[in-house]
Length: 340
Ligand SMILES: [Zn+2]
Ligand SMILES: [Zn+2]
Image (cartoon, rainbow, N blue to C red; front, side, top):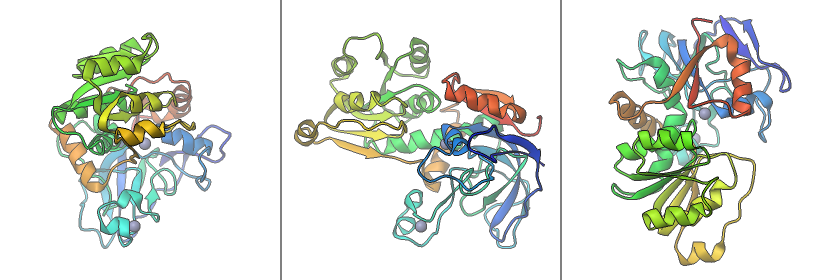
């Protein structure tokens, strides 16, 4: 099979023939149709996160395909089922986090395209106990971005602890943010979008945001958001610019919660006095559990959310990573694994 393999953190991925893997007892072999390309793949390929993947490896954690073979112990999926991989490839199933429905925090979790080979390949292995089940009848290319971008913003919105009718600030309307606007609207929240690009704010309005604020052209974007909403009940920061984080905290009304999902390398100042007196909550949120994934895919299958994406062949993977590095990607790029 063809795969895009990372052999060095300083060179391009190599598109090369590698053996098709054999499923273990709980694994399924999946013929990959499409895979989304996430910023995390870029970090994996460059090895610039604190824990580097072991070389060589295949990135990719938004893969969608069809099961072609299953291991002896597999009961949850069958040959012919459409499934995906996800950042959470598997977890231990035994620790305090796994036992309480927080497998995304399991210290012994394995991650697709990082600690196990991912979906930038024509076949992949998934753990049948953890893989997302893709609902029947959906466009597999459009489903791919739901598996990381979609579930991440859906879970992030849940962790803002907002209610229907509440205001939510979506900061950054890129690959994650444009889905966040749609999930928030589908969840009955009122959305104010914050970005530095009018075209992205227009996209947010098209997806149901009530107002958009351009942080680059408005004098005081925080004051603007507060004037328009009275202060937001919740905020989701998908932006990869550190400036967006204190802005989101500043936009909260009393008792509000900001959920952080974007991962810029910076720190940000948190004003202790305001945080304490206004009873604010600042929390991180990482991808989503299997239950979150089922819900996120269900919103998608019912047509409530749909990613903006462009399909490229596997052979274009290095160009795509370069485009991501330079912020030249609108929405998501989805690689076609079977037409290379
Ligand atoms: Zn991802
Ligand atoms: Zn665990």
